[in-house]
Amino acid sequence: IDEFLLKTSVPGMDMIPAHEDLSGAEGGLVNVIAREKILKRVLSTVTDFYDVILIDCQPSLGLLTVNALTASHWVLVPLECEYFALRGVALLDDIIKKVQINTNPELQLLGILPTMFDRKTVHSREVLERISEAFPDKVFDTTISRTVRFPETTVAGEPITSYASSSVGAASYRRLAREIITLGGVR
Image 1 (cartoon, rainbow, N blue to C red):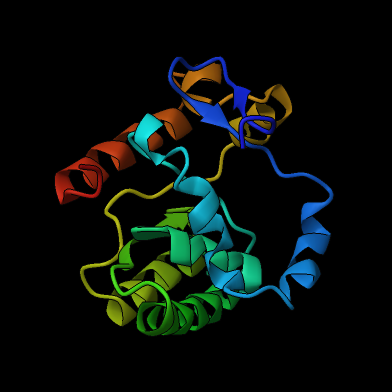
Image 2 (image 1 turned 180 degrees about the horizontal axis):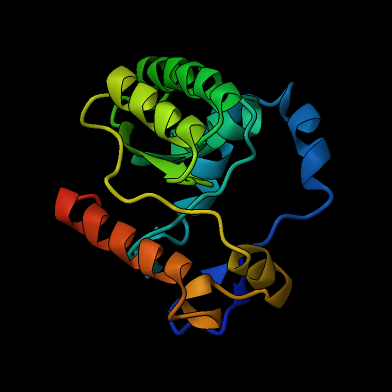
C-alpha cells in the first residue's frame, strides 16, 4: 500500500488516488477466494496509523463497492438531490443489508448527505423531503449546495477547506464534520 500512498498539502492527510487499472480490477476479482475481503485485508496493514480512513466509491453496486463496504465501519451516502438518485439509495440500502448479513455485521449507515442541493428549487426540496421520509433520522442536517468552487478544487487537487476555506462549500463540510463527531461517528 505504501507504493500508492500520496502525501497531501494537509498535514496528517494522505490519499491513494484512483488509477486507470482500477476499472479492470473488478473482473480480475471474480475468481479470487474471499474476494469481498481483499480491501479489508490490505487496509488492516495501515489502520493503526490513521484515525479515519475514507473510501470513496463509484456510484455502482459492484464488487469494488462490496469490498469497500466489507472494509468499513460506517457508510456515508452522498445523495445528489435529483429524483433518479433516490432509487440508487434504496438499492444501496439493500446492498448494505446483504453485506451486514454476509461479510460485515458491524457495518452501519452513518447517514445520507444531500448534495448538489439548491434551496431555491422545488425539485431539490422535494427530493430532500422524500429521502427524509424514507430514511428518518438518517439524513444529515447539513446539505451541500451547488457551487463553482467544487470543480475548481478538483483541478487544483486540494480539499475545498484548503483551496477556498471561506467558501460556502468549505463551511458546509466543516458543519458536516461537526455533525458526524456529534453523532459519535468518529471515535
